[in-house]
Image (tube, rainbow, N blue to C red; front, side, top):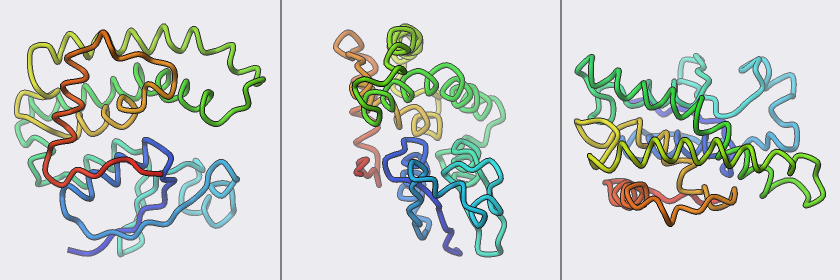
Length: 202
């Protein structure tokens, strides 16, 4: 199996997703740290690879590149138990991955960014009440689903769990309190007990 190259920023939850799926599938990879906060994704060389100027970015040995974290997850998990082969179960995984990008990440991850990376006097702190309102709505949806099953897809641990774990386990950094979400907290523990799991370190 050829090694792949990941251009990513370790602090990013979206990049952590890619690292985790690589570790759990055992695929060899090379990590190139790209500091998007310092403008390193806006250089001519990087934009030639990804015109959208974001991380993560996956590069194959033959030079092909793939952007968007959840698309990368699906590509890397193909043929493994992490991506269901049954069309309905696969669609269920994709449903939760779309939920993560549209109803979860824009609120929980952005609140984490504002609190962790912007100064205390940043005008963007005014966004936090609305971000937390919407973030808690997403956590409510997750709690109801996980109250009835251990992982997001009936077949077990999958790319959907990886996608949602990335920022949920860091929700406290955005000011979210998971004390009233026992099913979510239990799920976080189960994800961390899966084979090949590596913690998010940055």
